[in-house]
Image (cartoon, rainbow, N blue to C red; front, side, top):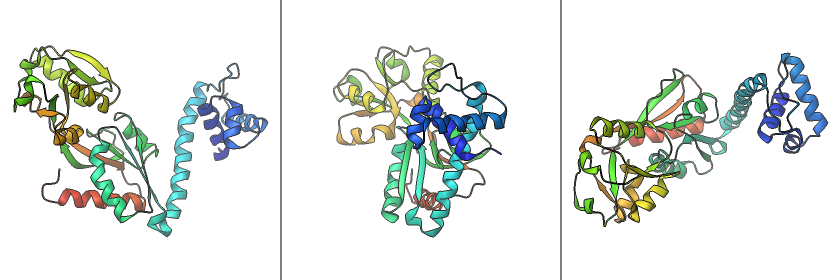
Length: 299
C-alpha cells in the first residue's frame, strides 16, 4: 500500500528539483529522503527518479505516479479542512481557480461573501482557463471560473454572469466618437492582444477571416492591464470583454465601441466537482452567487 508520506517526498523531489532541497523543505535529512524514494520504488516495482540527473528528474513512471500523488495529497488536505470546517464556518477556506479576466466577475460576490464570513480565508489562485477544469477535478481548487462550458463529465456547471466584446480605443482615436464600427473598417488598425490563447481569441480570428479582413496584431502582451495601458497611450486598439475595461471606460480613460459582427455574448460559469460534498465555505459562496443571479438586472 502506498504511503502518503513517501508520496509527499516524491512530489517534493520533483518540485524542488533535487534531494537536498526536498529534504530542507520537508525538514528531513537527505538520506531519509533518498530512503523514502527507494521504498516507494520497491513498492511500485519501477525506478521513479533518474539517478543520472542531478536535478531530481522523474522517470516516466515517476511522472505518472506524481500526478496521482498530487491528487491524493490534495484529497488529504481537503479531508483535514472539511473536518475543521464542520466545527465552524469561520475556520474554513474558500479555494477558487480563475484567470486575470474571469476574476473580475467574482469581485462583487467575493465582497458579499467576505462581509458575511470575515474569518474564512479566501484563496483565488490564478490558472489558465484551459487547465482550470482539470485543476478542479484534481482537487487543486474547489471551485473554478470559466468563459466556456467544459466538456469534462465530472463537473457541475453554473452560469452566473454574461459579457460581450467591445473595441477599446484611446479618447483621442478617430473612432472614439462612434457608437459602432464594422469589422471591415478595422483593416488598417494596429491591434494590441493578450498573448494567452483562448476560445474568445479564436472567435475573433475566425470572424476577421470570415469577413476577409486582415487582423493586424502589432503587439502581444502578457496581461490585460498592459494591453489597456498601451491602448490609453494611443499605441493601438484592442478587442476585449466589456467587463475587463469597465473601470477605465467609466472614468473616461478609454472608449468602448460596439462592433456588431463581433457581438459574441458568452456566459461566465462556475464549476465544481459533480457529486462532491462541498465545504461549508464553498456552499456559502454558492449561496452568494445564487442570490446575485436572482436580483433584477443581474449580469
